[in-house]
Image (cartoon, rainbow over all chains, first blue to last red; front, top):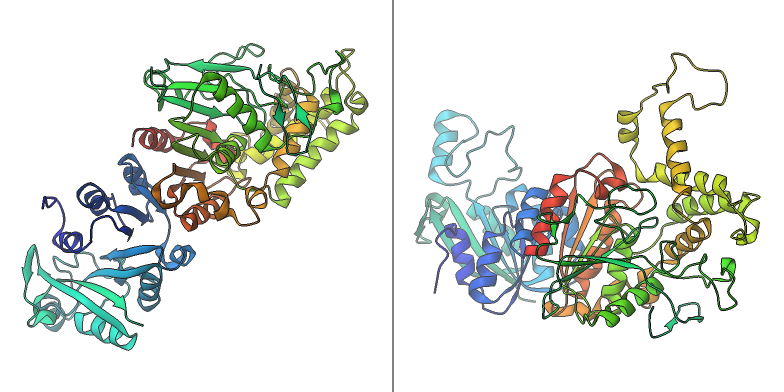
Length: 201
Length: 360
């Protein structure tokens, strides 16, 4: 399969696990990298939501269907199960209420992909333990006062939340930088995590 | 002249309607590169060429032309005067069957009736499907109405600074304009074509009131502030002391040189009657059912953050309905200082978005 060379590893993991010919909503789709990959490689009906107008313009120029909107507010306007998959990459930790966001993802999509930076990675722990300050690392490069990440989360926290919600994990992938790593000790070793979720009601 | 009569929403039939239009750029042999541009309330077919009455440049020359975002080197651009207007298409100033001008005998129109006229024109041209239909303000209403009622006729739909229904506030401003016209003693129940006493004062006031709604408070403050017009002190009279007064008077009187008061009544009425959901059983998503599952047109809606006439919420309302219908839709709110009129003015982001959508 022709893997887009430019795809970030978490996006590549998501792309590999999306069936061809399905309907996908990418929330916080940026310049449409994942969406155009899915459309071109997997004949996916790919839609997006993005908050920044300049990025929406770039998506439209690529022929993608992207709506400028705020996921916290506008996701509720989509009908139930309008998509086979919803995707939320590196955005959960910026949501006003990540728990409500998860509900919306699994309401609008039959399954959801969620990726996020793991706050329990050893670099973050070390920076906080020995520096005594909010960590600024390669995975979390922005200072506390200007970061969009208002709800830092660890892999263990995330597993606890989805278990409480009765959400099933259909798959999970962990990364340290560009490299995929095993799930063993992921809460220490992974900088990023990707979960594929479904609501098994 | 349309060969087929138009059946109107009012139940009346308009036979032998004339549609005046302009085209720009070559039509491809397979007729696949035609773009229909729909004009706004007081617009006309001179989208990219000099207006024959005012001698001013076309109303969207910054957007339409060789190498422009709507590139006439690539696209065959069609722009037609809507029925009910006064730049060559059949309207209240046209002769009825008895040879006298229709005046108020002209049937009340809807946006969908205007679109029926435009589709009639496309039929005469043998254009089965447009590359795109494009419009701002009332032009956007026509673009949406065409997509809803003739879903196969356009592959792309670009609707800028528009709405799917006229709000109470929209209707209220139009009613002020209509009352100004009808209060003018020269209006004479619309039967004023026989002499040169036309209801210019009323029409000018209508235009002045409407013009304010096309701008933004910040834009007006920036352009005029409280500056005085050609004087150092207030006159303690009712002259146009302020620059903004002088500007509005100029806009009003200039407008009467090129527009018919009865056309203004008919077209504002059509806009007030516009409610795309109502036409389709009360649910806006159902208006777009012909575009479900990615099989229909690609839609792009654009709003401006300072437009309080058709604010962003109206575009979002349309976007949500299109999403609910499963249509392919993009939407962006652009930052521009000029209020509703931003779609006609210098907004580089709009140029990029329009070009990108037509190319994408």
